[in-house]
Image (cartoon, rainbow, N blue to C red; front, side):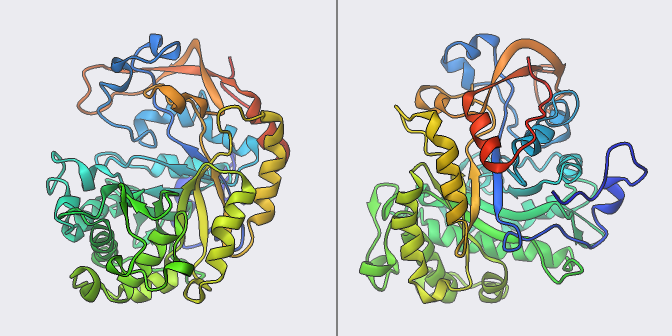
Length: 424
């Protein structure tokens, strides 16, 4: 791992994190990431069985905020555990602009982890959000420009200081599965995303962001679903939706990436959007495609990687799996180590690695969602969150962890130390 600061030493992450140096890029060091969104439980009963109350009462899902420090830092040390699995990165969810992420970034840096962070879908789809859910109009420039500006302010967001990004930030995900917004009526996911991309660049420009010493800036991405050419149920592999050659440009996840490429090249001619910034240049220099997939390695290789490689306009635009987990119902966990090693073999250009889904069981969800999670929660409380602004409770319990069998498989494949903290 690249370690920029050490525990117990005088060198402080908060001092070195904005010095202009950078961690390895995804091209230099392919992602071995863990998808991370370990919400506390609404009730201890939710650890045994799901009910509607298990998904209610969360005023923020931004666990990377300081209120979650006893989860990802001491005493449970989730980020240290992720490094112990052998990962070199962590992908986060939720981004509540009320809270700084600097301490989370520092903790990740201390453990040699890069962060794939992002914006919350709340701003695109929720009518109560600023702008009333900008996806309804497909005009997200202003909302995202102001939203990300709050992240970039050191005092409120911690993403940058003195015009320099925090070195732990590997990429910023503009949106998770934009294709689920749909493309019928006014809800056009392509216009929504290209205007958000433009607004993101405006926020950087207003903050006078400058590159790290190696000339790079964090990558920019959007994480598509792995649907086969259907956006929210509507088939979009056609010239009507900006696909020029359906026989070569369509496939799981791929269709949306190709559509967006063409939209970026001609935003006004395709979706009627006039950008304020040089989006073609930013796309060429910083964009990386991403997808969420729950399929075996060979299927991904045959249905995505091989097709992707044949498209000349993606020769220098790489991709990674923002969520990946092959463990379908009936899956034999004893096969996981081999599957991960096979995915690592496929993590050569154009594929820049994977983020394994996910760290902790999502107790706010039911059904098949509970199949996922490297760790379950135990009954013992080992800490507490701090107060979350707007909550009706002073704090929430931080529970100990119980590793599932998959943890050993991933650690074996990735060469992890398996030194875990916060275990029951």
